[in-house]
Image (cartoon, rainbow, N blue to C red; front, side):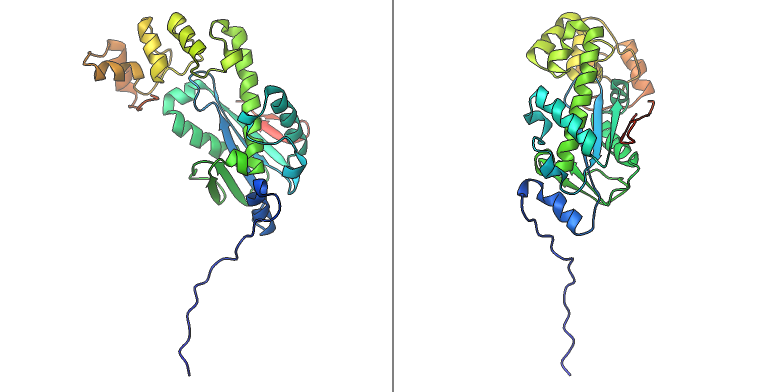
Length: 279
């Protein structure tokens, strides 16, 4: 008898049909790997205000029904507000996690971002069959996951999460502008624009700034201020060390309490419809 032939066993190929913009999510749904949750954040690159992370599960086909849906950064503020309300109305479920600057200062932005994504997915009542993240992998999620390059432009549920996170954060920053009008948070939302950098240099940082960031620490040092909370070794101390200056007593005390951190040193509410919880 002929010898047995070995064949490599491979999973069935997922064919992307129809609208390629949202094809990956549709392919996963057709293969029975849903519901698919998308995760994205807003505020990672800001030097003030919270980091906001959202997770969203859309029903199959909702990507096509949400005609304006795309990466939140490509939408005008008015369009983002419209899409935000439509996503909230149509989504199977979504969650939004608001991480204060104190937590960013304590553990660093990347760790904060990854932990926020884990929290957002874990808070979903509907257990996802698959999680799609924007750009980089997130270990420790409660379901299989895949990072998607430019996911907020390629996957409907990631785009929806990006809109939820962006609008939530923009509203928070508009509120912070009322408390801290010197910095123009209602315009640049805490990002390091020329206007924000000028205000930071002139007035020094506020308590809602991220004191572990190099530009914030530099402005604080110029005004003779030190972090109002515990942070990983402040960027001001790192700058002093890099230039051969001895760290101050306050910086030494901070270093004894916490570790180094490179360049960047709630209450839950239930939506009346049962859709979203915010922590």
